[in-house]
Length: 416
Image (cartoon, rainbow, N blue to C red; front, side, top):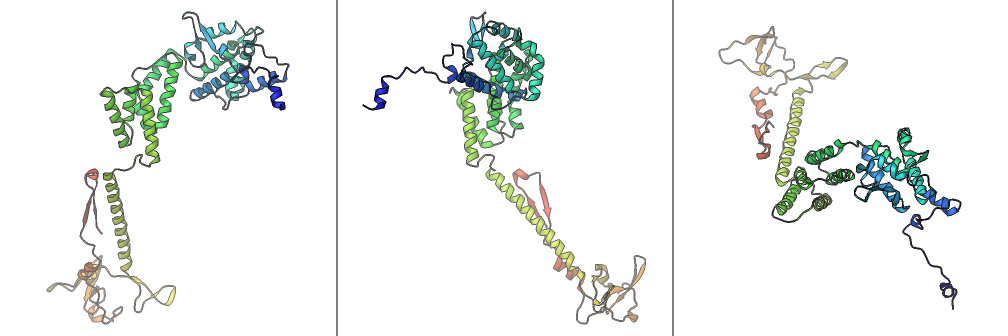
């Protein structure tokens, strides 16, 4: 027989527990032992994230603390007796329905006694203090008298003080939360129709109501209203179909609707269909792109025409500072190239100067035709008349780009 088989008969009975903290939870912990000290050390370590007493972080603090309480079996001290209803109120879930005075009365029954509950209370208190930021801890410790009993700290009283300092705990709180639930359509627009973030916001509001022992009866209607305010039209159609099913008698709970909405949102995001343009919108986008292209084309042609109006060389001219090199000058204004009509004078005044029509240059100039020396005149190269120039440089007829139904308010005339 093997050693394993021989030892099976000598094995002691194993005591089952989900966690080490729940093992023999009705017995006092012996902190003189290594196991006892390790248990205390692990139970009082800071939570995964420190709490700064802000209202938005309270939910995370409660969730983490609730998990720690399950591991080390602190539930006995976190259940506050309700003598009127002969029941117990879970402090972490319904903290808004329990007064600090009631928590203190319950804590007085064990805090200064030699029992497991007193040890758990101390563990809870140390865990909370270790899980606060420096600023939050400085603020909470100002209320030391409220969470100590005959000089001994109470973990549950400290918890109640921390919760109180983290949010407004008045009768108006329930009313404010309910008002927020009626404005979900405004909230979903403010977060750019992020369905996941929206659902988390709704669940947080519901948890706050539950912690105060309150409920809401019009959540489903508010959810339908909010989802219909989403920017994606296909998603809105999907929600409309669910609303029609509900109106026709199909049973849909608020939780089911939120789950359906979240799954639809994730699928559309994954398929890149969320807020994708419709066929009509794609046509509009294409037309807008074409209008932009025509504008760029027009601008380029305009720049080209301006450049062509500059003469690059003259026959005899030289630029100042570049002696011996051919100079540049601008083409004459159009009016200087228009000859006088039959019977009209060959002399006229422009801008305070007297100009004469020169047949040789085929242009108006300040010199007399009889005194023309032919400067700048190139034989065989006749200057273009304005009519000829316009025939080469004028733009095609105006085109009116009219963006159909969706762009009826935009009418753009572009010359290109």
